[in-house]
Image (cartoon, rainbow over all chains, first blue to last red; front, side, top):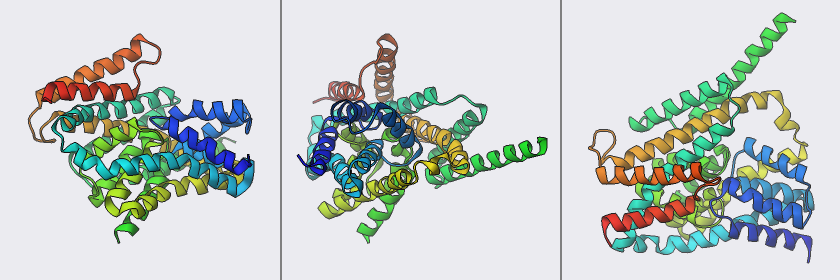
Length: 189
Length: 187
């Protein structure tokens, strides 16, 4: 099989069989691309995970683009990325055609009244897991607490400050803190 | 115009969604609610559907919103828009042999962004729970039924995480919640 087709099919399979997205996909990508196909080494896989954490976008897409490019350049990157996205695109597109009518059925609507309550818990859990993994430096914790309070207050009082604004402010604070630390070092030296 | 908004809206999501998975939810909420593409309830339903279907949550939500706003073309535009920023950024990083990420100024900016994202996600989770257990929030009265279901679900979910190594999966929690919804609110 040609490598481009192989990249496309392998990532389509990963896209089709991982539920939940995010880090749930990493073991499957590792199993396919490191253990079976040996497209990249285990160390490289760790590296991609770190890069994914520091770059925006779905982690699965980051991995697909990276591995595809390493194997076959731009063509490989496109094949792997499209392969990764295609299964969810098709499934969700089909769902979107009938979800509204589906929700008019009473017991299904009631099931969703329950499901709705689970979603908040899952999102809160995602944040808790990320805090556990975060290096516990006072600077990081202070930013987390400030961002949490600001975002919650803005949501409650319907103040239109988006999460993007908060992230840009946080980036600026990170840069300023870095420059201050650098200047202090310069003074000491 | 709507297609252009879909493109711009989801480029924003793709460009600023750090962390993957649920990390994108606050951003998607911002964008989707400000354009009025979905009401908050429908968005929450779709987050559950995305969790229960394969593939990255961001792509699932982009495809759904795109499709409801602009049919198959809308779905394609929104999905490509959400993928494109990470695709391009990864290509740049591979080309530059990761020099970009090792740059001290990029690292300094990320040292602010990463903890900020965690706070934003936590606040979104808390706010969504509050919104669901009060008839209106702020100002409404408590919906005791919803509150009790939420507490039971939280105990099951976090309790199972304490008792066993991995706990129950998010998809199983959604299944239990659906069952609870049918049992409590009727068939």
